[in-house]
Structure formats: structure tokens, C-alpha cells
Length: 322
Image (cartoon, rainbow, N blue to C red; front, side, top):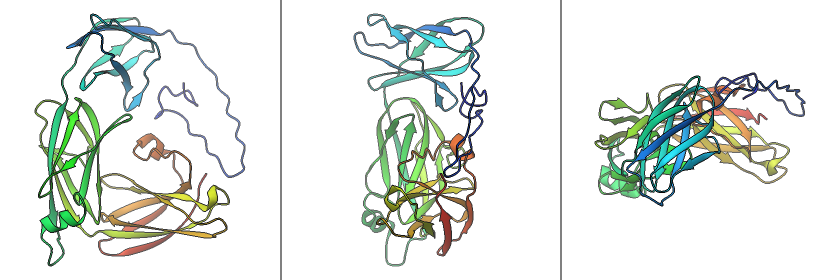
């Protein structure tokens, strides 16, 4: 149960807190009957532990009470509230998932098929290469590629290994649905695809047997935002600057900016940005910023809008919001 009666983080009512303010938050909890999900793991290896995730959208709502028969792979998940879920199971490098709907009672006969880890391949192609540099030289100079594709699922992050000419491989990826992020150095990605899927417009890739290769088209250059931040009184004069693109892109950018105690202003330069409109925020240091979480981004207020253009620098001023 979240504040405001929401059953998920996205549905919760946000609390607005100002510096030095006190807010009263009263909760009224309504007890609900919980149910069980029973089933079996197909492809289970006896006497090896298995980990379960119960996902409501992007949120992991896994209950603490899960039992698995170490001989047969039969499992029981307790304390599940009514709703639509994706149940995932992982054993070693094998993984699998299935949709489960819990209504007015227990759910039995669920089968989760464990599939071996797969290899995701990809390639980075460069445009707008500076005069005198071939794409191969640019790739080598930037120490592993202009752009780096990373797969995220919950706490799990899978990094690529780069070969020659911008080719990369992401090895030992358990099957499942991953958020794709692409971080660029000295430029930006203007196209990220896997087969017919546009990973800028829909940054979730379902990985399994036959996953198509990822193709990144990267442009050297980009715009720069120079942010001047009024130094906070605490945190030793440190802050975090968050740039949230208001268009389909490789996602928000988070940079930490620091200075000595007593410094009145902090300066943070963020380059290699794709042209477009961004909203900028300054946040306290030491605060977890789940900047890939759409629900978290929806709670942010008071940002500064900045239009980024290629090969230009934009100046903005920010104050740390608490």
C-alpha cells in the first residue's frame, strides 16, 4: 500500500516537501485477502537454488515467502494480492517467465520454463566523423566505442564487450525483458534498433533465442549544457544534475558535481547531448535518483527547460530541490 491508497508506485500520491518543511501523512490501511501461486519449473536442476521475481509492470512486488522443492522444482509463492503479474524465475544462467493473473483465489498449475542464457550481438555505426579520422580510428580513440549498450532488469545489469569496427557482444544474458540504455562518449545515438523494434521509442528488449542484433547509429558531436548550481548548505557543496529529454532518446543523463565547502556556486558541463528539448534539475548529493523510473520522473517539479542544439553550448542556472 502506497500513500494516497495506490496499489503501485505509479498510482501513489506524491508528497511535496520543501526545505525545512514538515508534512503530515496519514495512512488508512485496508486489509486484503492474499493468495498463493503454485506451479513447477520446467528445466529445473535439482539441488540448485532458484530466485523468483513477481513483477507488476516495472515494479518488483515479490513476497518474502517462497518455497521450492529442491528435488522437483515445484514452487509455492504466498501472500500475493489480486492483480496481473509477470512471474520470473532464475536458476544460474537459465531464466524464464510467464504472465499470471490472481483474482479471487489461489492459482495453481503455473509452469515457468527455464531457458539457457543467450548472446546478444550488435554493431555501432558512426556518422559525422571528424575530418582526418576514420570510424575505426575514432572507435579506438574513444576506448571501446562511441556508444555503449547496456541491458537492465531490476538490479541486474549486463555490459557489452567490444570487438573491432564497432561490433559488440553482450554475453550470458538470461532470457527476459530488459530496459536498454545507450551511453555515448563524445557524441549521441540518433538510432537504436533491434530488428524492426525502435529502442529509442520503446526501450525494452525481450531477450531469448533468436533475439535480433542491435544496431546503433551514433553521431559524433552533439550539444553541451553548462549548468551553474547554487551550492547547497549541506552535502559538502555537492549536488547532482539531472537532464530529462522531452523526446524519444537514450534516456535521462545524471551527473554529479562537487566543490569545496564554502563554494557558493558549482559548475557542471554535460556534453555529447542529442539535439532537443530537456528539463534540468539539481538534486541533493547522497539521495538515490532512479532516473530511469518513469514514476520517479513524474514526481519532479520546478525544472528548467533548455533547448539543446548541435555544436552549441547552452548556459542554465539551477537550485538544488529537496
